[in-house]
Image 1: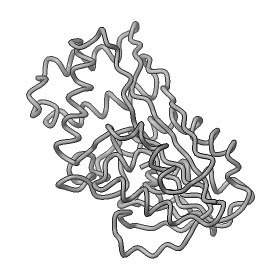
Image 2: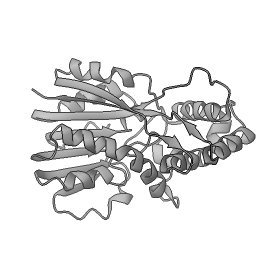
Image 3: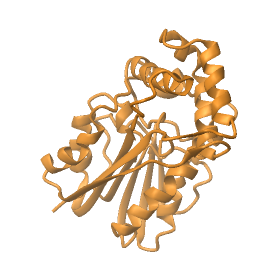
Image 4: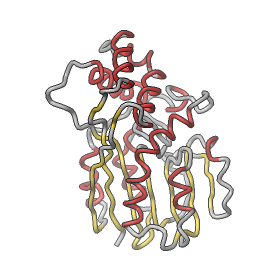
Length: 272
């Protein structure tokens, strides 16, 4: 999904993302996703605008989530069609523009016949999926000549002097839990520019964005709700218990809270 780090638009690991951790039908799930979109959307759309997205053509929004990026694309006057793809499209029902095609599908399904696009965008999706390197290759091959592939996933910029605070321990436990339950792996995210060059794309570049993580912000609420929903999985790692989770949650809400939270690395390249 195009929201915050713990989200995806396809199958992952041993199970299925939504059913395993973040059930779409659970009250407040769309609001949890949108809280992160508030932080990441301005950065995403600013880069897409700078790359010339919206001057025409077909767009594929992989893991469209609640549709915030899809809606932005539909506002570009030159966009002819947006395919909003997600394994759970329940939050996309309000997309009624005739140029949008909402597709309930798994991007890892090799039988998908989607055609080719002038933009393929995937945010906080690939890091959750098995065979992500091969998937990048397949997405690159969905580009029309001159088309753009824009992929973004989470990276941690860890404070080297903080290894034992409740915040750090819970964040680390979360990544471990995501990896053990659904296969999340962010270790190769810094290599995305290399992968795009290996696919023969040109004009390859990347940038890193770390949104402010302060008390009372939508992003702080996103992490708070995420950790609350993952309590059993966090404790199952053996790295934290309920008391540590409560301490981290209280810190997230405290007036003095400010951390360098997980960043988002966005990489892009153009089909010659």
